[in-house]
Amino acid sequence: MKVLGLVLPVLLLLGTPAIAVEFKGQNIDGQKLPARAYYYATGGVYKVQVSFHNKRATIYFDDGNQTTIQLNQQVITDSNNIEGFGKLGQYPLNRTFSVGLVYDNNWLGNSDNQLQQSNPLDGLWKISLE
Image (cartoon, rainbow, N blue to C red; front, side, top):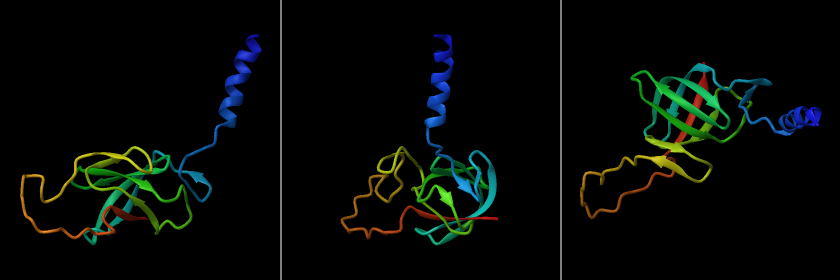
């Protein structure tokens, strides 16, 4: 019975699919890598560091801020074209939901009656590893 207690957990671990981010067949989860991040909403390019975990990337800015995005792909085939989605101040829980602060013009109680244009690329990031 003790053998079954040891073998069963090992079999469960072997049967669990790996969900780490891969590049060139290597697991790159947890490593902080130098990169450039392009934010489609602003058109800004930022020199950053990025670390991957599962299907997420955390982008670390030089000023100490960071944001976490949900990656579009888990296996990176082009280190200059890693895309993901995540708004500043938000942390993705899964593909549909995120939590955090929402930054917009109305958070201070600004009551403009103008309809604001929504940017369809708001939240889209492109990372290029250096």
